Image (cartoon, rainbow, N blue to C red):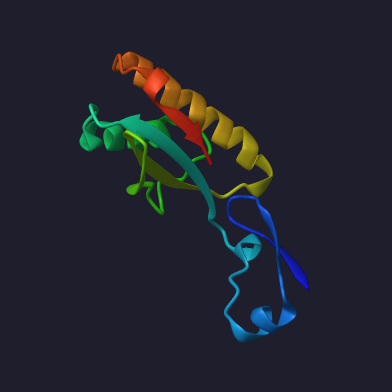
Amino acid sequence: MTQLRTGRGELVTIPNREVLATTVLNFTRSEHHPIFVEVEVGWSVAHGTVEKILLDAAKRTPGVLESPPPAVFGKDVHRNAIVHQLLAYTNDPEQMKQVKSALLYTIQDLFHAEKLNLLESSTEG
């Protein structure tokens, strides 16, 4: 068995036969390290509004890289909400938790500034 840490920081165990049979990307040798944030937002909020807020938050957060550029995806539907995923990058893996925390707080501030009901939204990632 081999243990690997995913881009989201989760520790997974994989049988060695699978490691040998598939391609494994070593992100610790990469200059860009992904940060994922997932936000559930009710159907009443336009997806364009959510995408704008998430991209603006990434742009305003110190430690988030401009290149590769952050991107937003519609990931899933959960109850009466759409799950939006922000993918952003940092080049400092030692500061990932601090950068992600700052990004989450910036997202919250921007949702408040737009007067969107955060009670129908949640973040994880």
